[in-house]
Length: 345
Ligand code: TYM
Image (tube, rainbow, N blue to C red; front, side, top):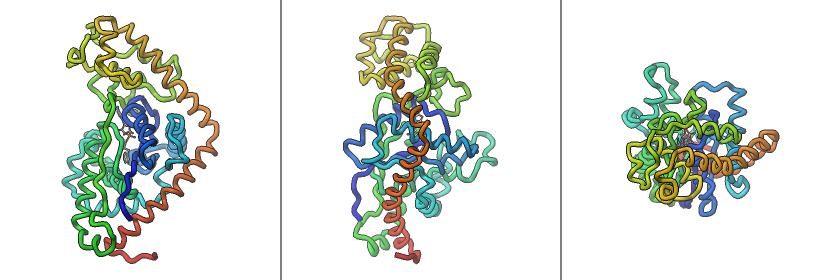
């Protein structure tokens, strides 16, 4: 096996896909299709690290799949599937549980945030979650991983795990494969003007599925009315917009809205401020409403259509899983040789 350039990324089916997921991740997933072989995964095994109602989980898996397709991911040329259908993810994650060190996981800020004060009551899965994420990527020996800023630390851990595996098993890797380095060190792709989209209610907090206020985020399936209301109600400050980017410093809400506008329009922040600088927020917000409705409206409509055809969505996931499994099984077979397990070849 030789390493080819391959993109892998995942999104959790935990409800309410929002503008942060779209601009921070999915827009880049779509772009990368032109230059890479891409694998996009609905990470249902990750979702159950916190409680999910089973019927809702099923709906959410289909909804994320529909969002991928509606945003422009082509499941025929590339691979779209749900994680639990390819058992090799969990299998490699176990090997990585034995490679990663407790000290590494103890540094993960997302676990600390998600577990909160009641850490004793968090699931073991939530703690080991970054090892599964490393397995997702490395079971395909993926080289590039498009994500939002909040996943950077997990990506660094994936690189550490790949490197430790390559080092620990260096002799066995040489004996069993033609590659001197078995796992590539996956490179994070954190690009675009909206790698960290903030809450519309508080510019210092990340836009998130779990925020209790629906006004904090724009959901991918919000209708025009909801988008308009949320943008108009978005928190701002009393100053007019600045004419230059430097004027956005220490103004998190203004900076966030300009960043969203820039990302949706493909224009730079500087260019937008030369148009809107000095003016009132209401004018800028009207422009943002029109733009957001223009960009997200067709996605929401396509998602609705796909929601009415679950059999088609499921067939995409089954076909994608069948193709993913072929690649994953090849890696896992080599991993078994390298670690020293006996298995049927
Ligand atoms: P998840 O499901 O929380 O988010 C999916 C993607 O959306 C990005 N994102 C954001 N980007 C900008 N601003 C925001 N406010 C924002 N909120 C979310 C995330 O960075 C992510 O790219 N652990 C991952 C899923 C995962 C994965 C993987 C990703 C599992 N295995 C392997 C890459 C490779 C997660 O929980 O993402």
